[in-house]
Image (cartoon, rainbow, N blue to C red; front, side, top):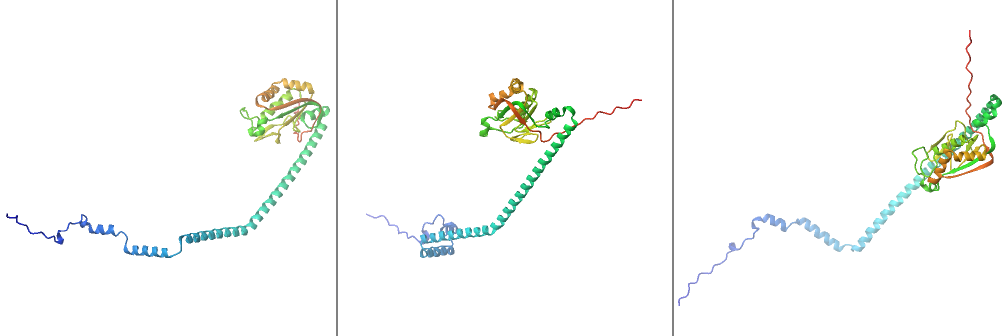
Length: 300
């Protein structure tokens, strides 16, 4: 048999090895394989070696904590030292402020006493002028004008806010649209006083403040003012007149019914009683106005 002719073996040469797919991108491959510069790599290795040979991690943590505490203590100490240095200055300013307040308060008290003294003097002079020039009706004029103190029978009317107002349910007392505040307003007091005058009262006072024909009842915030003097509830209204008759006429009047409606609908507290003897002070200041007859022209 003739054998098949054998072909010579083929030797692989180095140039016949398979090429890498990224052989044409040698620069990019080098960058990817050696992303860390050799200098940086040596520095990182050296730092790692020093860390392994240095202090234990637990000891390093404790040293860091101790350093933080020392720094905090230093800050607190410096702050305390600064506060200690500034304390005398603050104390001195506080003392000066207190002294100034005391001086101003004392001066205000003296001025208030002076005003009261002058008001009493003016009232006494006005009453004297009224007695001197009032003629036979001087006493009556003094009573009606409030220039003299009065005494006699009458009624005692007590008016107070609702209990709900004592628990913080109140509001301003200025005249405004009617609302359920549970607080007596200046307009309510005006109606009460006018109703008493119309019912026959000869003299009226509220919480010891004598009313005159020129008295004004107003409000400022939470206070009711009578002739610019603040009053606080409960309000005690004294009216000199025919006690039982005055009480009946007032309660049957429109203003008395209005006060009763406030009591029934909004909890305003009221009480009225006849009194055998009431004493009302004179008004602190009375404006005296005089009129002189016009001189007649002479006739020719």
